[in-house]
Image 1 (cartoon, each protein chain N blue to C red):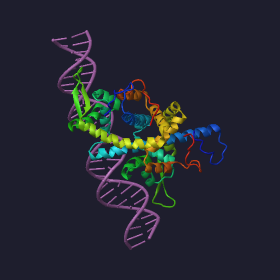
Image 2: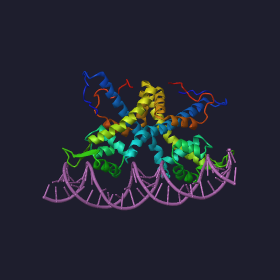
Image 3: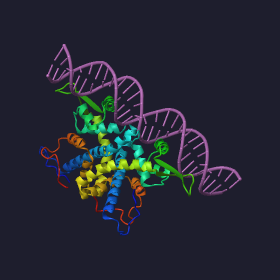
Image 4: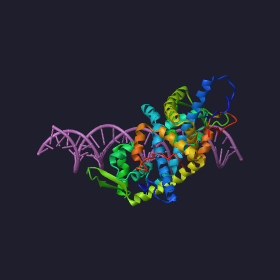
Length: 184
Length: 184
DNA sequence: AAGAAACGTCAATGACGCTGACCCAAAAGG
DNA sequence: CCTTTTGGGTCAGCGTCATTGACGTTTCTT
């Protein structure tokens, strides 16, 4: 384990060992950062949601439906990576309370295409604004280069499958360039 | 920042509005990245833990106790940000099954100083190794500069309180340089 | 007409978090 | 010395989020 305390002052530890130690500490730091960072990242919306008797799962539905209006239930399930039953427990109330609408697909009438109502959009926006401030602060403090690095690492942290889902979740932004490899 | 082509349909959007849109998209992307990234980041350990009838909460305890051997229950509670009861439900079994030991504090005998047993260290290490590979891959793909940026943004995503907790959670590494600007 | 697909739903289970209410033992302080 | 505070534990009950398994319905496909 972390033998630490070893060589704060240039001891002849093997370079390999030292590197290994650094790597380990670096990676443990990454664990900490992700734990605390993700927790605090979600804290804002969570507070709002709690007041409304909703949870993080509701937010995710609002978020992804907002991002892809007209998404099918199946696609949403694939993106969220949860089961039909789990989604149902959260989606049904959202529909009943008028946050989300269901419309039969024009090609396939078995489908229930999901979209946000005005009320749903307002809710999503409120949650988004809270998180927006938080992320903006972090982005500003870190600077553009750091932000690009952050994106690259987070993308690497995602599985290949999630990366594909992300693309699907991207609203068809700029036609030609799905990637903005700028900034690097 | 990602200049992302022009306006898809050359509308006379004001520059300010365009910038606003870009920011919004950027921030929504951050939401996606954090959601997918964190999920997949935890997926590896989760799978191992599930086999052993444990969950993410157990991992966190093993992680932070491993990082600060001899930590008090109170400090652990502060770091995790959960209640005594919630911790108890996870800590008690870990002690009973021999992953964690409790020792009375030498100064204050009311305290139960927590440490990992050998079994606990082995378990933690196993979980760590799984996550290590995953993060290493992301770090390698992204490169050192990106890693440093990632750290800066994640740190910014943490609340001030969490940042203090992080410092407390840091084993007294290299005294002078809390940052290793070299990275990867 | 048969089968598969898209969606919904009932029922039970488990992990993880919370509040409230107590309890004990040890430390602190008048 | 005696009371209060603090560190820790525990019982009971609640809510969210996710799971599996088993059906049922409508609609598309072959």
